Image 1 (cartoon, rainbow, N blue to C red):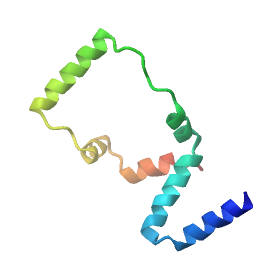
Image 2 (tube, one colour):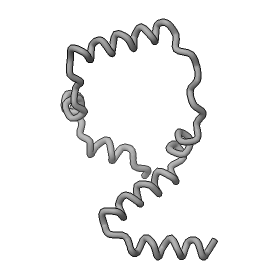
Image 3 (cartoon, rainbow, N blue to C red):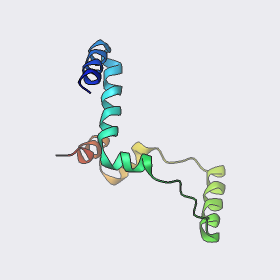
Image 4 (cartoon, rainbow, N blue to C red):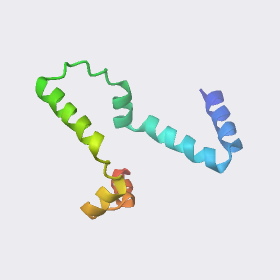
Length: 92
């Protein structure tokens, strides 16, 4: 185990900053219990109800004639920023 950690440290030291941030994000996701639970969750194989199928059909039809709302616009309408969301998600 010590050899593996040492090897990981050596590889991390050789990464350029742009790749380092990606690796940090990956490690954080791997260590986050919620992310791990989602990744290991079984596939939802529950059948779609007629009501859900109808709602999906309506949504698809709406998107044929309308554009989606950009994420930034939704945040602005709610009066929050992406930075606030990121701060809220980080453990204290």
